[in-house]
Image 1: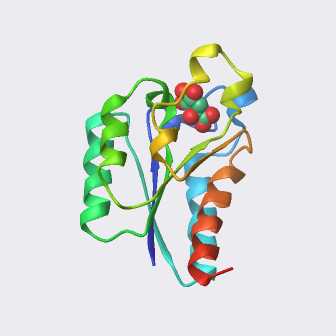
Image 2 (image 1 turned 90 degrees about the vertical axis):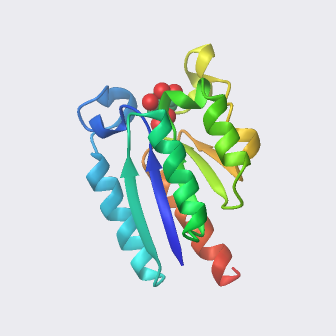
Length: 146
Ligand code: DQA
């Protein structure tokens, strides 16, 4: 089984960016934990980050075309703005889980709405960086039939 972890804008700055909200872990730390978890299930995970909306859209279609089994996606601020990303997710069969490190519902009103959540399997928000692992675990366990 092959999975993709996609991170959107500003998430390359994790560890340095607003640590009181997003914590001290870097994206590399998060990705290392995901790779470890995938390996425990004999699965693979590829991790990509971009600050560009179109690049994220291209990667979603590439994932679909190359037979990726699930996408863990933190779209960052595009969550709250991007009809284009929503259309991309709606247009593929590969299941996508939306992940946010912070609890978007506790924050500014503009973060409460997600264009993407209605076309995703589900949304994980506010569990810190563990949210990525929770999403991956969901895919891995579902595959095992647990
Ligand atoms: C975020 C929440 C978004 O509102 C914000 O724009 C981000 C990060 C999170 O992981 O908590 O960039 O997706």
